[in-house]
Image 1 (spheres, rainbow, N blue to C red):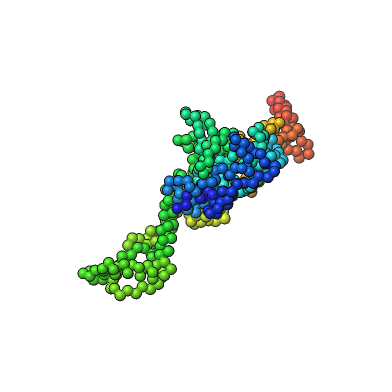
Image 2: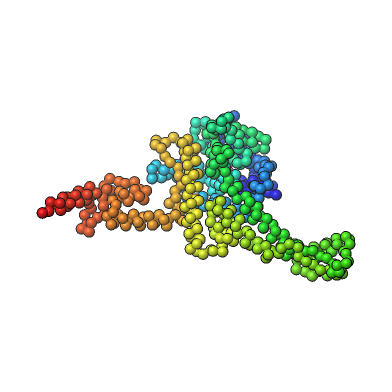
Length: 446
């Protein structure tokens, strides 16, 4: 049976052909990257194979985890998350102002000479969802220089080595096809999903919470496939019509072979003619009696639940039963707000901490995704602009307060309320002073 590694490698930027994933070839570095320090021994990228990918198919996994590879619901959820991840660009920000063409932004779009970011980051998401951990190797031209290359590491080849009390991370051990390397923590971007309570330095794959549901869904699919392949509604028992007679072993074997050949497999729906007087009774339950379509509904819903993907977006039967345009739009908004926005923040914080700090800058910058580029979030953004604009026009807030609420920096002279009907703008201090003056006059009235 295919391993869970196979499913991760379907999202691999190096291809998905099982015979030759391009993992056993050595990358060729352009002249601008010759001499990049890949290991502590100074091995260049041109001399190093793609660490972590070689030998991935030889990994031994528990059979329950292997079930994920053949489950279409798992694949659909990961595909939706990974494709949505690519919608907003990663930018470097100075407050609310984006720094144009920052080197980190360019590195995110093209992490190494072989692959683009659009191909690598879905692999990172698949590693997080199925293994709980994604690892990227940082390569620099010099030990103190800026990062030049990000190379993905297969998560099953990376082991974190900690101190005896498990409080300090010492290094990462990478074991790929018998070739072992030790990487300093500064050389690796580790993006975990949540936290493994038994190993706090590692993440916990969300799919593990739904392993039973994955296996249940797979068994129902296998049963349906078996029924259709063999052409039987259910297992059957053939017995003599006369209770006092018997079918000898030779006739039984011949009858079984004839049954399978003439009405099973490619001959399903055909006519069976037998010289034996017998009756046929159903053994077990038919697909209708088992209600397989209903059996799979709960597993589908729970698999989608642990990934944070609404069933209607994953295209499962449970979601399509209630599929309308309104429901789809509502589900997409919930998916963006409660699944993707936290994921974008999580990934950008890891990149900010591990990579952006390696670039020299005159002031503290911040790496985060430009969520204004996410089309599905624009409706809420439009509603916020309308509400703030109405508050400003009604004199409830100043222009500076309105700009702050919308994420724009206030400029000198913005501490004013909306223009009055006479066309005169009053400052906030003047308006408060006017109110105080009026109240004083009212208190002095006889």
